[in-house]
Length: 188
Image 1: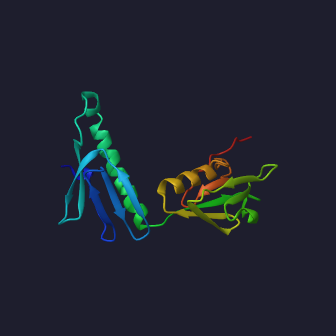
Image 2: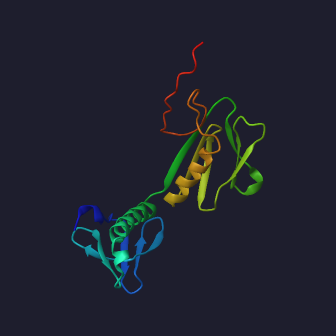
Image 3: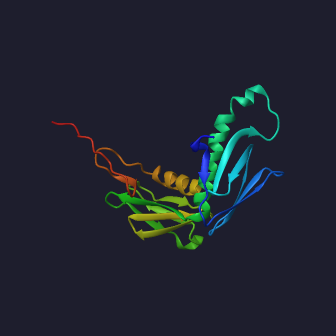
């Protein structure tokens, strides 16, 4: 069995495997999640390792046998994501760069609506799903956090798409660790 198809389980997460229902139950300090699987799994209890095999639960056709390696890799990736989600709070920081670029919370909507001033002639409103929380640290910094990796990353990408950073002045919505390499303008 290759190492890339093996996942080490942290000590603070408990994994329960049900062969009949074809599910894995992850019990972590923050939440509990269930993953439906298509391939058989082996446990190494001495080392706290899960190994995803290529063996399916039922017999399959030849066309699906070619997809077994893809399904195996996807299952390993999903297991890793769920281990992160059950153990840690995932966050993303966004910063607003530009004169007058601001983020405000709208008070009437129970902390689920954000208003952006992004240099347009109108304000831009963005609704945050109930799975996530956000905080405006300053008017130019936004902190999005939650337990779902996919929701946090997708929401931060959607907010960033409201005003992508432009390459000449570097104005726009940037991730906190992102650096923009500025292009040189036309010379007269």
